[in-house]
Amino acid sequence: MNQIYDFNRIELDQKGFTVIPNYFLPDEINECRNDIDKAFEGGKYPHHITSSASSFHVHNFFLYGENLRKILFGKKMQEIHKNFYSTNYTLRNAVASSIQINNAIKDNLIHNPIGSAWHRDTPQFYDRNNKSHALNNGITYQVVIALDSTNSMNSTKAMAGSHLDSFAEHKLEDVKLIEFSNKYGVQDMLLKPGDIAIIDDNMFHKAGVASNESRWLLFCSYTPWYIKPYFDYANVQLDDMTLYEQHCLHQTSSPPNYDEHLRNTFVSNNWSKVE
Image (cartoon, rainbow, N blue to C red; front, side, top):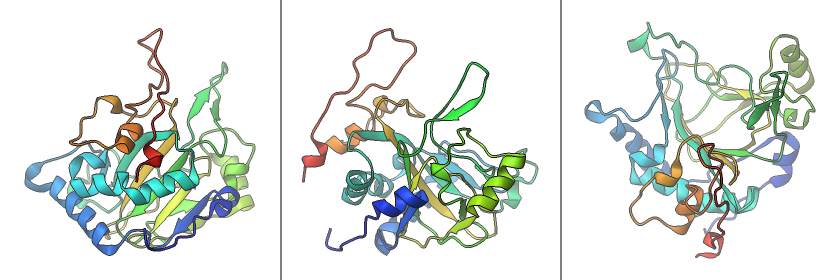
């Protein structure tokens, strides 16, 4: 990488997110947009969820084009991996998401963009009283790659600093929402094509409001290797897989599986040393 970027870990720790502008080149972004468009040509539909206000929510976007695969697993994302979270972190989920008014499916039961309620994406568990608890800040992270510009309407909304709050639940509702809004305020996460945002998953945030404009973002979630991913990535087969791809896709580690009593756990490799 020829350009020097500001990997602002202090801002991430203090605010719960940091933005690196122009991290990816326009050609890299345009190639990914082309892959997204091709994925839906000719009536093909990758794994997705649709709603009247969330046109597409495509899981495992790296399966639908070489450029999407390259942007997720390339050197620039490896640099983010090395600088913002541990090199033994792996992929929890990778989603391409567009929130755009979709008049073609007005009668769909889902009318709000996915993630429209205030929430945090830190893994959660429930105690014996069925109360939700998030794992805490500084554990899991999300990288957002902008393929389109966001604006004050359709951008992700963030409560900067809320990742440090002792409140442990997954969602904000009623009185707590008012309290947190007054305490932390609400900030638009404005991005341009090629910008990336690194988010502490413990920060409360929500999706923006759908408009007529296209708003494609790539959401890439990273967790310690022992946290179970959304999909069984160990069975994913890609041509000429790199060490880094094997690592991210849990092919050198074994997250929990309730069907097995005993299982090997982490097998270290040297992907971060490979030039």
